[in-house]
Structures are given as structure tokens and as C-alpha cells.
Image 1 (spheres, one colour):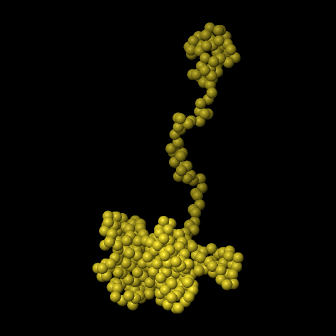
Image 2 (image 1 turned 135 degrees about the horizontal axis):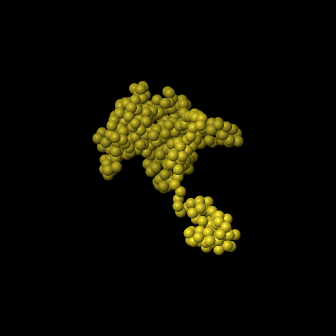
Image 3 (image 1 turned 30 degrees about the vertical axis):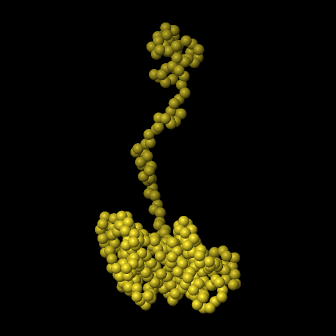
Amino acid sequence: AGVEQHHMVLDLCAAPGSKTSQLLELLVGQRSKMGGTDPCPAGVVVANDLSAKRGYMLVSRLHHHATSCLAVTNHDSTVFPAIHLPDAAGKYKRLAFDRILADVPCCGDGTLRKQPHGWRTWHAQMGVQLHPTQLRILRRAVSLLKVGGTLVYSTCSFNPLENEAVVASVIAAAAGGLKIVDASDRIPELKRRPGLTTWKVPSKKGEYFASAEEAAQVKTGVRPSMFPPSNILELGLERSMRFLPQDNNSGAFFVCVIEKLSAVPWENFGTVDESGDFLEREVREVQEEDMPVPEPEPNSQSIAAKAKAKFPPKKDKKHRDPADFPTTPAPEETVCGKVFLKSQGDYVDLASQNEGPDIVSSMAAKYGINAAPG
């Protein structure tokens, strides 16, 4: 089913706004088909984009619709916040969307026909770099979708790492909570090809791997979610659609329609009491495992301590400790008949060493000091 006038619709990556504009037309068009007189239908379209600059462009492009059933937001799609609204009884409930469009950021190699300058920057590793972000967006979209709702995942890319790999990873992790819808009856004159079930993953060195086990033997940096899962033939990826330029004299696109059958394992939304305070926090999609901290060995030194002991820091001559420079009198200074000898580093009572003043004079002459009594 398409968009109806009471639906809550979310466009996660909306800018520049052409698809959002079509969603608004569908929403408002349903009201006119039903013969309604209310200028604003019950449904709402939420258009979101990560870039504030593109968000302003989105508002400028959509203002001509002159409708109040549009909300523009500026959030990261991978962590788009859950919205809680009060019902008639004053209890807050989480808003689940009936329809979600996730036209995710991609390498855009499907648009090279109209943008040939993209060949200068294109490389096979772009899919590897974008896959984690696309995967998080789709997982978040599934969390925000109502059970029984429909989600459309799309890109303008040929790369299976951005298309089938993302969908297959989410469908496999959903444990039966999601299914791919066969949309071949929609616009039958539009030629399409089924989704792929086999592909290889490139590494930075130009190597291609067919499985995660094969890539694990070499430190490649690729993720297991980039490879086809073991049950890929059971996921229905052939129902996803690939639109190639030579088939329709257009750009290239990948479209997959997903229906949510039940709650998925990674969503665990908290409840809210009547005052609006959260009783439980929403669990993040990606949780870090609590790794045990190893106990230090007895009488063991840290690596830093060992290195410091082996290689003591050199003192800066310009900023040395004042204690390294004891205040000493001049060599010729005398204190109560004693003189300071640099050779001995202390005051010496020359007269006590020999009763005669000649000895004092000779010692003073030897060390080049004035031995006159103070």
C-alpha cells in the first residue's frame, strides 16, 4: 500500500527534497480523493537531513506546498531520536512511523552517465567506506518503523556492498521480523533486474574475497556484514530491484521494499510515565561488550615506568631546577677568616691548617684569592 492521509511518514535523508515533495503530494492528494475539506490531513511528513545547509535548501524547496503537515529536522540519521507524544489520557507513547524512506548517502556511481567527472574520484573502496553508515541508517529506520509498516531502502549505486549487503545483513539479524516485499507489479513498464545473491568484497590492496573467513586470514579491515550471509537464499533478495541505465535510458538505482512483521531484536524502547519521565532508556543499537580488565602482576612495572627508568628524561639546560645551582659566594669572598675554595666546594679555615700567616698567604696566592680576614 502507498501513502495514506493518516500516515506518519519519515524521510531520513531528505535533501534536496524531490522525493519529500512527492510524499507530500501523495499525502495531500489522498485527502482530496477522499473528498475532505480539512486543509491539513491527519498525517505528517518528517523530512530530515544531517546537513543544516541542505536543510535550509530543503525548506526553500518545499515551502510552495503551503501545508502544515510538514516538519523539517536536522539530525544524524544513524541516531535519529525516538519521538514520544501524549495520548488522550495524558500518557506518553512512542511515535512509530507508518512509512519510511531511506535514500541513503552512496558513492553515486549510478549517476556517472550525467556526471562523468565522478570517474576522477571513484574507486572500488568507496563501498567499503560507506557500508557501515548505510547499515546503521537502515537499522535505525527499522527501529522507528511501526509493525506492519513499510520501509523503502534505496541508493543510486551499482555496488552490492551498498545495496544487497546492507539489506541482507539487516534482514538476517531481524530473526524473521522483516521481509522483502515483491514490488514487481508496480509500474510494470519500468524494466528492472533482481537483486544479487553473490558478490565479492575488495581490499585496499586490490584483492577480492568471497567470504569473511577468507578475508580473516589476511588483515583487510573489511567487516563480516559486507559478505553474503549463509542463509542468503532464504532472505528473498531476488525481490529487491536493480534499475540499470541501458534498460530505461536513465541512471542506475537500487530499490528494496521492506515490511516489518514484528519487533526486531535490537530495538528496546523504554516506557514513559504520565509525567513524561522516561522509566527506561532506549537501548543503543550498537552496544560495547564489557571487557574484563586484567589484574596487574605483583611487583610488575608498567611499560611507561620501565621505559622511564631505562631512558631517563634529559634536563633542559634552559629550564633547569634552581636546586642544581647552589648559591655560592665569589671565590675571593671571606667569611670570618674563612675563604671559599672552588676546588673543595666549601669554606676552608686556612689559618687553622697552619699557625703561620705565611701559609695563609701562600695558599691564597695558590688559589688566586684574597685571604684578608673579614
